Amino acid sequence: MVSPEQKENLFATVAELFDHSCISFEEATLEESSRDAETSGSGEWWVPALERTVGWVTAAVEKREVAVPSPRAQILRLAALVDSDALCWMAEKELFGSVDDIVRKLEGDASEPEPEAAAQGSKEQVHDFRSKLLEKRCRSLILGIRQMLTAQFSEDSVPAS
Image 1 (cartoon, one colour):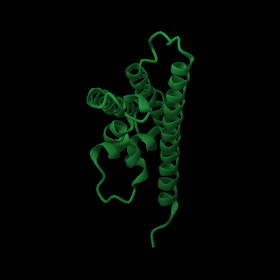
Image 2 (image 1 turned 180 degrees about the vertical axis):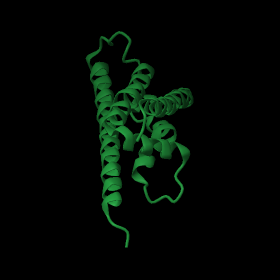
Image 3 (image 1 turned 120 degrees about the vertical axis):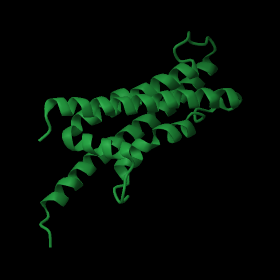
Image 4 (image 1 turned 180 degrees about the horizontal axis):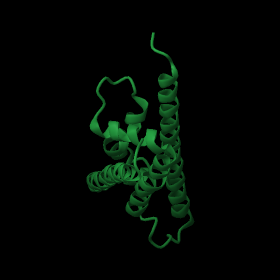
């Protein structure tokens, strides 16, 4: 049984891990965008930074066969067992919401809209690409959390031979 204090501490740790990943992502995207200014308008320039800094979250829920998972993966898996709904909410709102905010800021979506229709159409396409990709990654992560939980309960319910 997990006490409310233990649950609070566990999810505070998850929040710290997510925050650290978002800070690392922002730093990586700043480096990428300054290094590759000519390709930053493609809509995909930030994806490698996402994989390097936030990819561990998806790997933690998808790679259950790893004999000794990383401490981050162990914390995430424990949080999923304690309260999968809270973890899914945190992943969607705090992790992927922050990633979207970071990319939006770097792409200049928060600034005044450009008057040229062609430039505005291109900006909308980049925004659609970002939204769809992040939504797909987020759905995949949430599905992985749910499947991890289901697999854990089915393993626990099978009697030992």
